[in-house]
Length: 323
Image 1 (cartoon, one colour):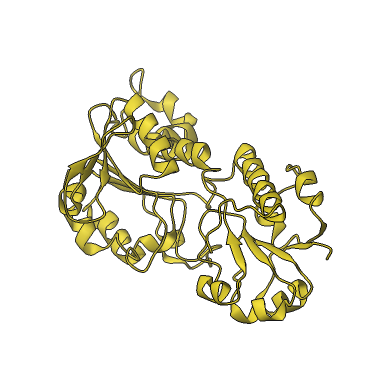
Image 2 (cartoon, rainbow, N blue to C red; image 1 turned 90 degrees about the vertical axis):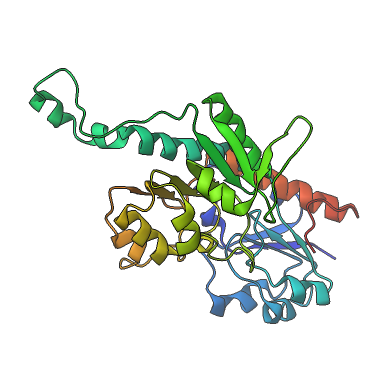
């Protein structure tokens, strides 16, 4: 049987700067550049052997519409856009790609963090104010240092470990949140203190989210956890938008309950123009458009990983299989 590969939303990860020859060597490939709407899914994957999706949701009905479907390859690490139970019931394999974006996301975390602690973005945006200063510098915004501060990581996987390496280079004390409410320390080269949840939120100067979205951690950042944080603490979310209760976060930022936040992900993407986060206009809120992962090197690693997954499958092997 000829292999037909259907990519449902290519432009979500490619602007013409990615090499696709590896994927094209695996079979007949049909690309849909713009995202596929729910009403278009069944028709587009009807004769597919393999479906590649970044954000298009694949449910059981879509799987049933594709009589030849053998595998779904998610062009990401998170697989919350696939009904995994439905795939398992139908014996359809599901693959992801892990680790490809770690350098890009870690770099982004410190790009936004450094902006927030140095206010360099504010100074750089208004060079005309420097000549107005009565002396040689401007002290409009208080600058703080990272050295000696505690950097807390939620989700100590590939990305979390990459972030930890950079944080230590800045002289920060790095801890990870324990999955339960107990404290312990790891051993080995990646040894890190795993701090009990209550102590974690109360102790950290910076908290960075790198965990997947699950039922258990939905809105893990809420009025209670925000209330436990230091009034100077900085929250960074490059994970998933729904890890954060956005109404509670905006209230905490407005009231000075925490110092600042940087969000690369929010609850609806792309957001409507009246989305509360977009309309907040808070000086201590730094927003980027889900771009942390998207370096050209990261995106090429992603597609190289997809090729390796699918080659392995065709050879009767398994690589990065989720279901």
